[in-house]
Amino acid sequence: MSTVSTHVLDTALGRPAQGVPVRLSWITDDEVVVLGTGSTDDDGRVTELAPDGLEFGTYQLWFGVAAYAITSGQSIFFPEVTVTFQINDERHYHVPLLLSPFAYSTYRGS
Image (tube, rainbow, N blue to C red; front, top):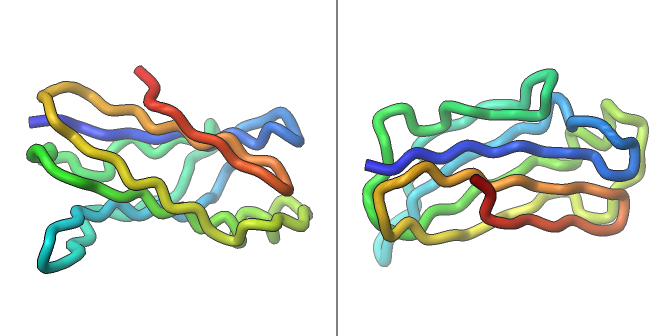
């Protein structure tokens, strides 16, 4: 089984993005199944979205960026970010999100 974690960094303020709501879903041909929810901690991390592990397949991380914008006093162009990715081997997957008021980026971390 694989595992997944995420880390959200505010590149405009140069610090972790605390309090970002995050949801992990499994995407199939027939349905979308929510596997776990959480919010980023003081270090901008969510470590246990699916503690029982993940099978091979397509998954989606949803980030509620609008909630973070309010608490950080920023105006953010993208109120939410969705990252869809595939798990095709047994390992840990880390999916960081880098935020700024008018852009975001992500990558497969380690």
